[in-house]
Image (tube, rainbow over all chains, first blue to last red; front, side, top):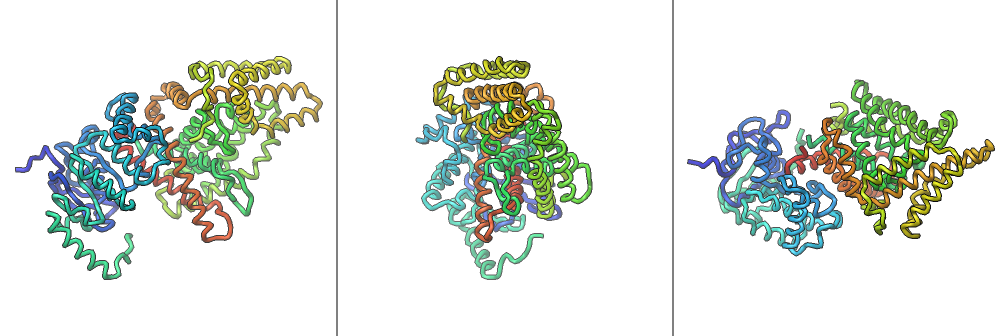
Length: 243
Length: 180
Length: 199
């Protein structure tokens, strides 16, 4: 009997854009610690993440995170789930590092001075105390990714959703970030274009056209995914317009 | 609603950026500052309420000490000087321009030009000229003559605001929040 | 982000922002009630002394802030010479320059965060209209955060233009710039919502 008070549970959840089903009646019970999501562009991966985070609500069906609805119960959602978007510049809201870090804590109820204090402590623990008053624009791309991760971690969510976290980064930065992620105690749900990065996952979902094309251990799903991608790549892919 | 807040903030940033860039060649090699163009766009794109709030937010930051007015001006001093009338008129201009955009159903480009002329010039200059008259001890006629110096540039910007809004409507109809 | 606030702190920095603003309002009203050029000259001298109390560097910085007014000084000066009313012209100019200089003095000696706090307090009665101090603070931070991003992007768009045109970028660059601002607003709203919203 599945324990519905723990984990991510979707029951026939759909998200539509106009007439198109971006996500089509998904039913999933995600309780593993490391979950990967594979799929082509436009398959609905990011929308799925947004749905789990409660940033959007399903057009039909239900979404439950540790027993509550993340779309309507935002307070509970803040403690349960954090999300890291692909482009740090699309999620950094404040001009300096310490303000950016303190924000999530202030949102969770901490007075601003305490939130700033905790933010600076966290930076010190990472050997980056000198970042505190630095303008965000002075950080490199990898450093901005790192800042976003730190901001999410400070809110201590139980699950972290990662949308292609390593895309566009140089190899050393990718390595460093990947190691940081691997060491995290939270549940991680990671979208990746690169199947290799999901080899260590407990479970991999392959999303295609808003539906689950495959769902299982990485050794099962990844080769099937790669084979299909090669097949499509051999044709003249991507000539169709979305409209 | 977070979207209202962020739209207001991002357009306040847009006004600031239009003051920070060196005078761009808006037309045939005539360099003019683009900032008042930003004011008009706040109205035509965001609509009356959000447009005015974006301008007010911008002015609040200027008052706080940020050099966001074209030419790197800012601080409380600009509100004590001769252009105070224009500053006060900016949010009103955006509101009127937005109001016109929201109320009419004529094509967005034409509507935006009309809105920019009525709001961004008509209403704005009433405030601006009054402000100059009070601050410089001039009669309204004298201040109007002084204001005429700025008029050709602003007239051009009103037309451009219309053209930009029209392009936006064509490229992405949903982008005109004043018309949704 | 560069501000007009003096990085070198003088005695006036320690005076509470609200008090400075109140005094400024009173002083400005007083200035506009004065008519005599002599009294206005006195006020202007006092203001000059105020600036010098912060040191010569400070005073010079203050002068720089008043410089953009020179066209008005020229016009008013010439006009009043033309109408043979030098006294009237002097009054107006002295009043204008003094008022601006006093206001700038407050700006130069008030930290950004202190000024924002005062504005938040002033905005509290507007709470009914949906403007909470917190929303104002988040909004202001967002503006400051996004100005360099948008400036960069505008420069990039202009360069992309120049890469394919002989002429400098014209008004059309404002179309993608505005669309990008709208997109940024959508994404920032989402990021804000993901971290508890602005409510």
